[in-house]
Length: 234
Image 1 (cartoon, rainbow, N blue to C red):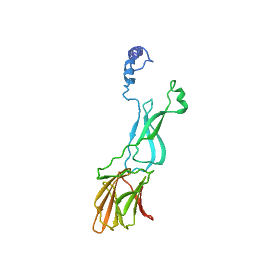
Image 2 (image 1 turned 120 degrees about the vertical axis):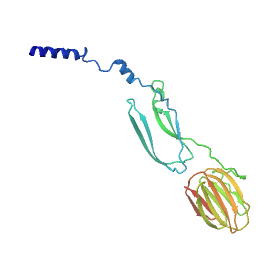
Image 3 (image 1 turned 90 degrees about the horizontal axis):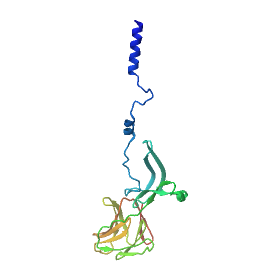
Image 4 (image 1 turned 90 degrees about the vertical axis):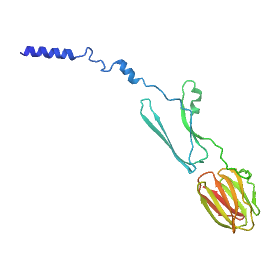
C-alpha cells in the first residue's frame, strides 16, 4: 500500500515540476512588453510664468521632476526677494560656466530663472504725455497744477489744498480731490509709464478731481511736500 502511495506522489510531483526551476514565470516577450515604455515627452526649452498684479515678494520656487526609475521628486529653493509683477519669470536650462569647455563631451545643465520685460497696455485718451524716470520733467495738467512721474511716484506741483483721496478697484484708480481755485475742462492724459496708465482731470462744483488709472493692484501713500503732493505706490 505504501509503495503505491509513494509512486503516486512521485508521479504528481514530476508532472507539476517545470523543466527549468530557475526560469522566470514571466516570458521574455512579456517582460519586453512591460519595460517597453514609449517616451512621449519633448526636450525642455523654457517656460514663462506670469504673476498677478498683487505679487510683491517671490518666496520660493519648486520644480517637480521624474527620476529614471519613474519616481517623482521635488527641488525647492527659498528666495524671499522683491519682484516686479510686470516681468514674467522665465525658467530655462543654461550651461554651467565651469563645464562649458566640456559641453561637446558631456552635457551639464542647471536650471535658472530670469526676467523678461513685457510691454504695458495703455487706455486710449485725448492727450498723450510721455516722461522717462531720468528726465523727471514737470508737465502741465491744467492752470496752476503740473505733475512729474518718476518710477512708482507721481508728484503734483500745486498750491491747491487736497481735500480727500481714496482708491477705487476694478479698474484700480487713485482719486484725489483738490480745493477748487479755477474752472477746468475735463481732460484725460496718457502717461505711458508703468505702473501709471492715464490720468483724468474732472471739474466739479466746489473741487476738481484727478483720477489716476493704474495697471494693477497697488497700495499707496500720499504725502505733503513743499510744492504739492507726492503719491508713492507699493
